[in-house]
Length: 196
Image (cartoon, rainbow, N blue to C red; front, side, top):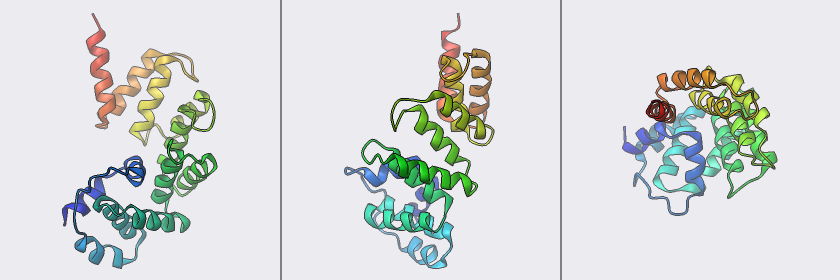
């Protein structure tokens, strides 16, 4: 499998949304014959999704975005997630579109849709931060999405939108870290370094 296809599989929805906007993006691959022939022509949503990612990694943001938008219109959850992150970004902020795409991803069965909504509320991408709504969204999927568990732990650690509970925060950080989520591993290390 070509490197572009391998890299495509590893790219997260948030990274994908960032790459769609990054004018200085340095492509990781020069050609996509394997992906184009073996993935795009299969016709499945997963094949098209990987092909869109591969196009993005090769530097073709316009064609990649068009394919992602087509997949989202067809109800593909991951594509809706990518567009949710794209439309919640500061460069292309369209709150109604962001929320719509996150909800579509969630309704289609992707728990990362609730994570996206939580992050949207936590960072105040529409107006002011709404930590209570963020905590509610993260709580819905914390057992399935390490990123959500990590962000929920941070809310508990600082008492944002929830009652401050450092013990629960540490338990959640440990759980997210045990899933291999690097920011949780780093946060635990910092907490341990602060202990006398």
